[in-house]
Length: 358
Image 1 (cartoon, rainbow, N blue to C red):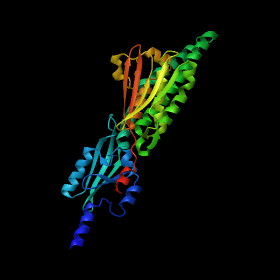
Image 2 (image 1 turned 90 degrees about the vertical axis):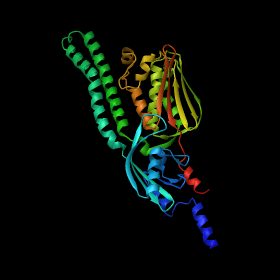
Image 3 (image 1 turned 30 degrees about the vertical axis):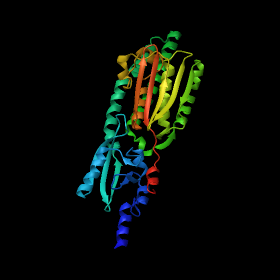
Image 4 (image 1 turned 135 degrees about the horizontal axis):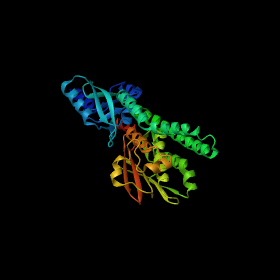
């Protein structure tokens, strides 16, 4: 009897996952996790961390905890489709097909498969058509008018050269707009975190700064990098580099020659901040809420002269939101602007597994 009581005590106090479950969780290409009676995560797949479902061995979304409580209470499995915030801040969301079931007498199994692509498809198609009709008509119309003007001016070489130069400028602008609309549509239609990897922001900053050095040197501008080192996030390296490159490029375009652009990395309590500060012309307070809208330009004439399409900051916003973060802007006319990207700091996926061996 004493031996049986002792064995029962060991069974109740054990945090080991039933045989074979760890191997199954490790093999999943979608989110899977196991909760103990105290709702501690004792095992989780890599995708559970990528989706931001698990932090510090805890399930962070109340919606999932409610489903777990229902399963514990009723004892029956649940299959629901739910929408969750993609990160601790920002407006982006993720749509999951969630299955919750009891695993033995003590544990609960949670499986979550991403269904976000299906929701994005119609929105992407609709926005792509709207973007095309909104903006491409301007350079296309300009090229058409210039082509019509060439024939009457055929006997005037100077006029022909002037019209041809303007056509070349509009063609370049048309190409840039098309490329950025396609990039923006791809961002809306792709689930970045499904293939996210752990990325050191030092590499992102170094790459983005390198892409802008030639322009900065030509205008005697300083790109000053500072802040924390070896801070990691989960995401897509190329897209995060694109976002930071767009911010630095904007800062260069709207700042005077010989000025200074600051790029800094800060992190605190699981939040990473990537900050770009310039000494440029600034943005009026009434325009700040709109700077991330597609095709919005604070100064239409200056944007067209510098080749701006009005899509750069919108692309940055979508990249950041798809990484579970948000972006903020501060500015004062005549003193410059500061753009701050906020992202969740990368959590080591092995943390919960190490907790199994306490």
